[in-house]
Image (tube, rainbow, N blue to C red; front, top):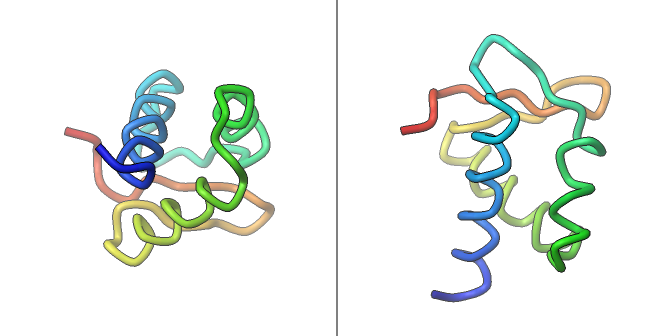
Length: 73
Protein backbone atom coordinates (compact mmCIF):
# COMPACT_ATOMS: atom_id res chain seq x y z
CA UNK A 1 0.00 0.00 0.00
CA UNK A 2 1.31 3.44 -0.93
CA UNK A 3 1.44 6.47 1.32
CA UNK A 4 -1.69 7.98 -0.27
CA UNK A 5 -3.65 4.81 0.43
CA UNK A 6 -2.27 4.62 3.99
CA UNK A 7 -3.35 8.20 4.62
CA UNK A 8 -6.75 7.55 3.07
CA UNK A 9 -7.26 4.51 5.34
CA UNK A 10 -6.18 6.52 8.40
CA UNK A 11 -8.62 9.30 7.49
CA UNK A 12 -11.48 6.81 7.08
CA UNK A 13 -10.58 5.24 10.42
CA UNK A 14 -10.52 8.67 12.07
CA UNK A 15 -13.93 9.56 10.61
CA UNK A 16 -15.32 6.28 11.94
CA UNK A 17 -13.78 6.90 15.37
CA UNK A 18 -15.45 10.31 15.42
CA UNK A 19 -18.75 8.66 14.38
CA UNK A 20 -18.99 11.08 11.45
CA UNK A 21 -22.39 11.35 9.79
CA UNK A 22 -23.44 13.47 6.80
CA UNK A 23 -25.48 15.89 8.91
CA UNK A 24 -22.58 16.88 11.19
CA UNK A 25 -19.48 19.01 10.66
CA UNK A 26 -16.10 18.28 12.19
CA UNK A 27 -13.47 20.78 13.26
CA UNK A 28 -10.48 20.17 10.95
CA UNK A 29 -7.93 20.86 13.70
CA UNK A 30 -9.61 18.37 16.02
CA UNK A 31 -9.81 15.90 13.14
CA UNK A 32 -6.21 16.19 11.94
CA UNK A 33 -4.32 16.45 15.25
CA UNK A 34 -4.33 12.68 15.93
CA UNK A 35 -3.36 12.01 12.32
CA UNK A 36 -0.34 14.30 12.51
CA UNK A 37 0.58 12.73 15.86
CA UNK A 38 0.55 9.37 14.03
CA UNK A 39 3.10 10.65 11.52
CA UNK A 40 0.95 11.94 8.65
CA UNK A 41 1.88 15.38 7.38
CA UNK A 42 -0.56 18.22 6.80
CA UNK A 43 0.22 17.99 3.08
CA UNK A 44 -0.65 14.27 2.99
CA UNK A 45 -3.91 14.86 4.88
CA UNK A 46 -4.83 17.82 2.66
CA UNK A 47 -4.07 15.88 -0.53
CA UNK A 48 -6.34 13.01 0.50
CA UNK A 49 -9.11 15.33 1.72
CA UNK A 50 -8.99 17.21 -1.59
CA UNK A 51 -9.27 13.91 -3.49
CA UNK A 52 -12.22 12.87 -1.31
CA UNK A 53 -13.83 16.26 -1.92
CA UNK A 54 -13.34 15.84 -5.66
CA UNK A 55 -15.04 12.42 -5.41
CA UNK A 56 -17.92 14.12 -3.49
CA UNK A 57 -17.34 12.03 -0.36
CA UNK A 58 -16.47 14.97 1.89
CA UNK A 59 -16.62 18.73 1.61
CA UNK A 60 -14.69 21.46 3.33
CA UNK A 61 -17.30 23.53 5.14
CA UNK A 62 -17.06 27.15 6.29
CA UNK A 63 -15.21 27.80 9.53
CA UNK A 64 -12.37 25.31 8.88
CA UNK A 65 -14.72 22.36 9.17
CA UNK A 66 -15.19 19.07 7.34
CA UNK A 67 -18.52 17.52 6.38
CA UNK A 68 -19.08 13.96 5.25
CA UNK A 69 -21.36 13.95 2.22
CA UNK A 70 -21.88 10.20 1.88
CA UNK A 71 -22.02 7.73 4.77
CA UNK A 72 -18.93 5.61 5.22
CA UNK A 73 -19.33 1.98 4.17
